[in-house]
Amino acid sequence: MKMKSMFKKGLAALVLGAVLLSFTGIDSISNDANAAGKTYTLAKNKKGSKKVVKNKYGSDYIADFYTRDSIPSDVSSNLGSYSSLKFSVSVKVRGISKKGLKLIAYAMDSNYGSWKEVESSSIKKGKTYKLTLDISSYSSIGRLGIRVASPKKKCKGAKLKYTVKYAKIIANGGSSSSSSNPSSPSTPNNELKYEMTGKTKDVAFADTPVGKHGKLQLALLDEYKAPVIVDANGQKVNLRGASTHGMHWGEMTPYVNKAAFQSLRDEWGVNTVRLVNYVTQGGYTQGSKDKLDKATQNGVSYAKDLGMYAIVDWHIHAENPWDTVDQAKSFFKKYATMYKDYDNVIFEICNEPTNVKWYTNGKKDLYAYAKTITKVIRDCGSNAIIVCGTNTWSQDVDEVAGHTIDDGNVMYTFHFYAATHKDSLRQKVTKAYNAGIPIFVTEFGTCDASGAGGYDFDSADTWINLLDKYGIPYCNWSLCNKAEAASMLKSSCKKTDGGWVGSDLTRSGTWLVNTYRAHEEKEK
Image 1 (cartoon, rainbow, N blue to C red):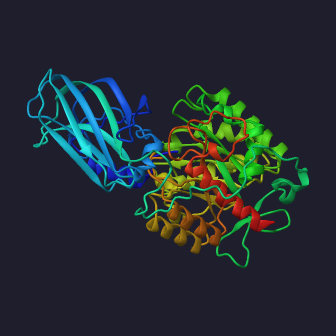
Image 2 (image 1 turned 180 degrees about the vertical axis):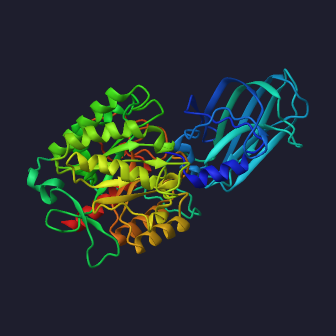
């Protein structure tokens, strides 16, 4: 779960000349019975010290805390249940080297297209400044934060020391239930339509997904314009996946277990698990190799026993894959050799590459990278399906046309987050499909591109209908209880080994069960 291109462009344009102070988690929640509302404390006594520098866009700014976990998911997804909503901050300026700078509290909606702000007078050392911003009109929140800027954009070289005494959301006149905003363009799917007992089933292997379909391959069927996944008998197979989060992070590792995967198979309608190996960010090439190898091998083994398909994901994120190509070669040589006779393994060789085009000259581009790693896998004797990441956060899948890998079992990645990515990207998918490009959506979310903002279930439904029409498989992000909108499980749910019932699910998890189970029913 990752930041997508539309978000980055919109954010870059908005924060020129700015300090961004984003806040993580909920420190405390206090009820006010008279106001029938809540106060969500996002940050308290958080100190910082920065020097303003010139950024590549030509503006003077400093960036401090930056994270996609800014807003608690139960706030960002339930705004319609409050009659008033305010963002309030108190900041003490402990030191400042230039005059004329101001504090600005800001808010953005989940599409990062609506910007609100309120600013202080010129700030002085030793003074505390309190700012309150009315965000009642927002139906979703993408970001809240504080910046420091000069009206004349003469911040460069300024040194600022500050303490965020508090930053909080004040919500009054309602409850924090999951009721939706009737005026919102999205109609959240809040009600679980299927019984979830929390119990698994005794299923004969022959009746499992892999037991029914065996090893997968690509084929061009009469009713489709691009190759689709078929089984050993040449019949179309619909893969519906659930992705782990980063398996090297301690709070995410426990979800890689057989009982959890069996719950997904038996009560969620999931037939595929995606095993996420972050390459950097403390991942495979930065100290977590042994931990990720163990999680990957366990995950494939559990999936194999349960008759589920497994995607072994080399999770390049916001990087050029050529920077770690030697490690990628070793990784896929190991696993292609290990799993060459397995019927259930798919290889994803590059999650979300950036700063590199699909094709330039066929040398240090994504085409050349995909060709290189595909050869490594094939030389090990594996004919498994391979999925290649595409440029711009795996969104420019249409640029593959004319430069596909000469291999009949290679697909190309597309990712979307429903509240941010809409018609313009659906047009890219349609263009690629019409050009005969086999597509695999190895990651999608029902929320915005940050993973922490509002939902758009109407857009998610539109996406799934389009993917079904084109025979494109998909995999949802992510199986965990992280306090963000993209998670399948509520942060209050501490179960990691399955046994989940309806009350354990986030709104995204509820939508997922309803959607996947409905698809599963049609196949019976």
